[in-house]
Image 1 (cartoon, one colour):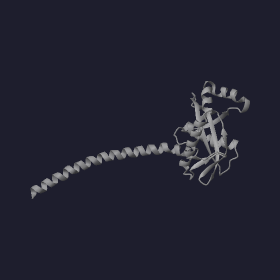
Image 2 (cartoon, one colour):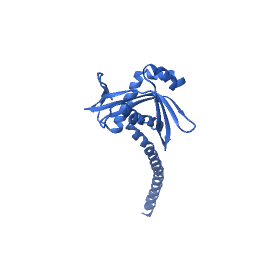
Image 3 (tube, one colour):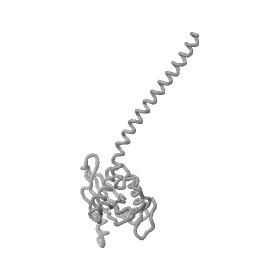
Image 4 (cartoon, rainbow, N blue to C red):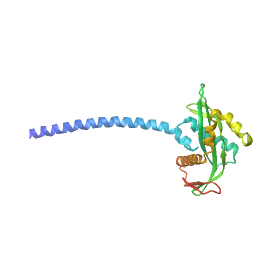
Length: 213
């Protein structure tokens, strides 16, 4: 009987050691997962913040551009109210970080304004606003300090060449690629819908078929 008890005790001790080893590994994994989760939460904060402007990335410069298109360009150029949803399309052509920490961003920037009609975002207004934005540091983020848009009408070409410089040809390729811009526009709308949990399934420009999201 004593021999059987000794054998059982040995078995218990062996499994106890195995269990301790596994728990030790599990503890390390839990610590790693907790650390990863903490980092994910930190990086996710600006993503969800900019999601309300149609941007789900974590680049503070690009996020600031999306924000500016909604909070400034849309409000200054269109008749928007509290029920209007403004979502930009941002296509950056060039980005330069200056010695003083400021950033110059040139690109083709659009913003469209919508009203919800059932499960559809109906376009109310919007347009193209290519140009150059000058951003300054704002804590760990950035904000647009000034915006120089390309001139309209007969001054367009000269103005665009002055703003884009040696990137002018690249800009014109982007500016004339309606397919690529529409894809970016749809992506931004999807981002907005996901971030805000808006219950819509499509958007529609007047006189055009609806586009499914």
